[in-house]
Image (cartoon, rainbow over all chains, first blue to last red; front, side, top):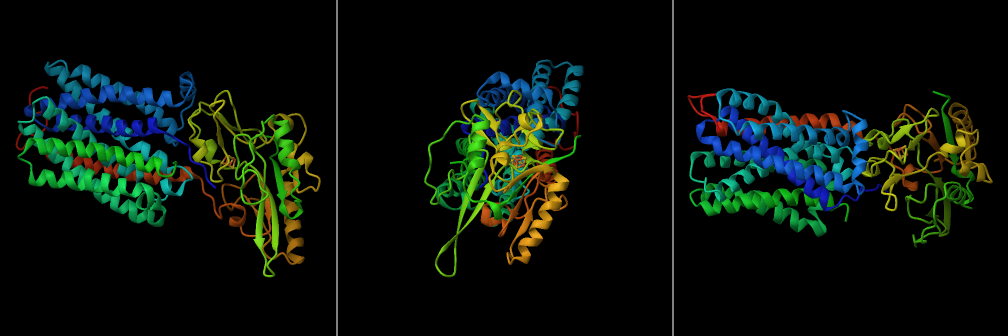
Amino acid sequence: MLKTPDWGMMIVFYFFLGGIAGGSYFTAAIADNFGGPRDRQVIRLGYWLSLPLVLICGILLIADLGVPARFLNMLFTFKFWDPMSIGAWMVGVFGLFSFLSCVLSLSSSEAMVTLRRKVSLVGTLAGFFLASYTGVLLSATALPFWSEARLMGALFLASGASTGMAAISLLLFLSGGSTGEAWGKVKRADRYSMILELVILAVFLGLLGSAAAPIIQGQFAPLFWGGLVVAGLVVPLVLDFVGSKAKTLVALSAILVLAGGFILRYVLLMSIQA
Amino acid sequence: MARTLAMFTDISLCIGCRACQVACKQWNELPMEDPEWTGTYQNHAHFTDKTYRLVRFVEKPQADGRLQWDLMSDVCKHCAQAGCLEACPTGAIYRTEYGTVNINQDACNGCRYCVSSCPFGVVAFNHDTGRASKCTFCNDRIHNGLGPACAKACPTESIQFGFRDELVAKAEKRVAKLKEMGYKEARLYGADSNDFLGGLNAFFLLLDKPGTYNLPDKPKLPQRNVFVDSLLSVGSAVLVGLGAIVAFRERGQGKGGGDNA
Ligand code: SF4
């Protein structure tokens, strides 16, 4: 009889927002380093979105401990093989990069931009880490549902990318920047991420086999199949292909992707903890 | 490190009196809990933050329709490679010089990661203190020349305390004897340090397959997953990154071609 940690909604939100923070940051960083002048808004939105999110992440992590000051206990130890330990450190490291990139994005002097690009290349690694380590954290437990497929981290990363990009796309729409070519690029990158996420998810379920029961059968199955697979991945992909001209449809698909990313974390965490 | 200490629980000698369970509660000042109906005489169903020693009452239907009881006093295994200890981000879970695994309550921050990292479901979260708790191997007693309270209280020597090497030798003799007596399924669990988790410092003599007593056949250290899963995450990151680069790349201009954001 194995025990679950009884992590609640705070941790679901942490996993979800951490994915978006990492995803929007590395999307911005890649646009910054490989894109062109038209991607300016994507770059800014990506950096500036990641900063408040990582702050919320830190607050959620600390609040979940019950006695906030006990967070300090983590700072006396560093275990590189332990996702919980290194993860807590990396939230701070990522926050630092996010902050730096935001500050540097305020200036448009040549030197600052060059520096910002360099900083963001390193920050990208932290972003990738933040989006994926939560999956590895789950898989390094004794619980078969979390640990038997080797792809939890890879899945979280793809989902972090797709939700991070969807968030940028939605913000572009809301801020009226949805006309330019940049929007098309974000949507394209998002599409690739979603396809990857679907593929990883399929392999993940295959590897889990009967251990996947908590999400593919019973109470959580409708949410998993309907909310994540259909509404959160397949429908947005279809919408992107058929309705790419109608902006509201694209915005709707971004909302669906975000909801799907939340549902992914929710069902993976809560289905065996309920 | 001092010589490794161990507890050897020989279930063939257990009479189900629960003296160990009670002695543990008394010594460690663990409050009572409401009894729960588990379907057998066993209480509770599993370890809790207030139950560190637990006598399992396993009912085995026999061919003649009667029930046979296997009585097994279960406890934290004080694994040589302990999932709880590796998972702990604060270092609150540590190994003592005697080889036992203990939680420093002051350093525990209540993250609950150890709870799901024990392959035996031992560690429990204490909602009153907001910290994790489990068997301490009576850390205070062993540092004062005494054995754990459970071993001390056991009237049949079903729980024995001593140096690990000596206990293992004893256990091997005992299992050979039981086999001679016709207990075909008798076996040691966790005595061999080459078998799993580097060996258990609280090991058992079982009369049946481990699953009978809610024990995994071949428990493994959960942290062994970290390496492969991280590599696959890197693979996923590379694909995502390439996809984004392809999407954002400005044809003919290349890197640094744009002006500034
Ligand atoms: S049995 Fe569980 S709680 Fe005890 S040392 Fe091993 S991993 Fe830790």
